[in-house]
Length: 146
Image (tube, rainbow, N blue to C red; front, side, top):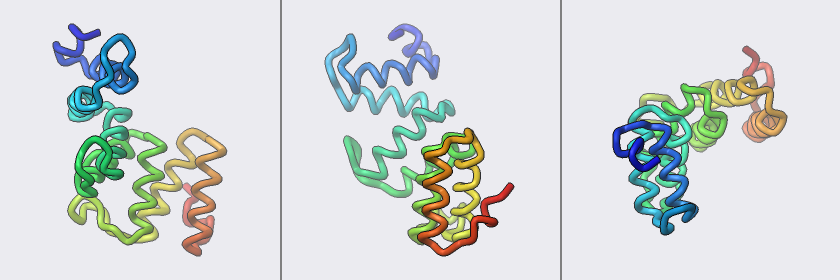
């Protein structure tokens, strides 16, 4: 796996990042995990984009940086990553512009990401979370219909 990751294979880089984070077959090293996930994220792997975005959002292992978080949440969301779609909706509902005002901080944009999350997989938990967020923000469920 290391050889494939060294040669730029993004899925191997994601897997190697997972190994370093969990200490599976290598010493646990969160900095190394971040380095491998970031390489994969920059090649467009949605799972790695989501992981890196979460780390920046929470300020875990890397400095907290909402702009960097959004930089990785957006492409993961566009690839259909449900977790990224839900996180973007929460950021937008909080009134935060995303990725340097690329996405306006508006309930309609947030609802769009919620609709994508709920319809992407038919996942009941995502659908429930989407409807709960819509209810909290007093939007009609019709807003999320395709």
